[in-house]
Image (tube, rainbow, N blue to C red; front, side):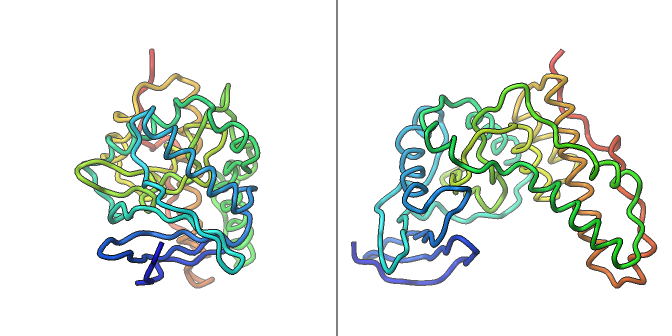
Length: 272
């Protein structure tokens, strides 16, 4: 495949994403240069290929078509169709995003061998809360009691782990032809579906109205699911509060504003 480099879209610790062209068509190349989520690069390429071949058509989830795999200078690359723009918060699409998420949570374990070896993304937000709380204290700040309590808690676990996307946020959701294309399945593994749902709305700092749209789009929740979702939303509230507080000068940080109370979160629909 003859590819012409056009621009670098992102460069992270484990991956580099480029836009390239082949003839008149734009494509995306995702280069892997180290383990990500516990899997070597060749397995990540294989995992994304299996998702496109098996998971997407069976469960009405659009993913970028895998066009080719590359191996160059110690890097392994995945050539994907350009699925369109990502990262744009669209309130009217909140319910659709959540419905696609619901589909992803009810797949059969076709990829079990790879998913079993994927390091779960749980504890990611809680670790951030604990790290920033320590930084805030070192600046002379006073961490609110509700955040101290949450940081001391254990992240809740589901009654049964299911397949979760692991990185379900706006930058991994593209708009194409009136539908949603779900990108970046590297962290597909086993976990709590409420972790994914909370990540969808909280990472984008959605309004209460957008949260309600997403919850309604996802569907009915059991009391246990609702309790776990509330906990994850609370951890995100703590994360964003600390993020703002630690970004200020130490003098300002010593006088924190009112916290986002845990019981002020919008209640998701709950199964009777």
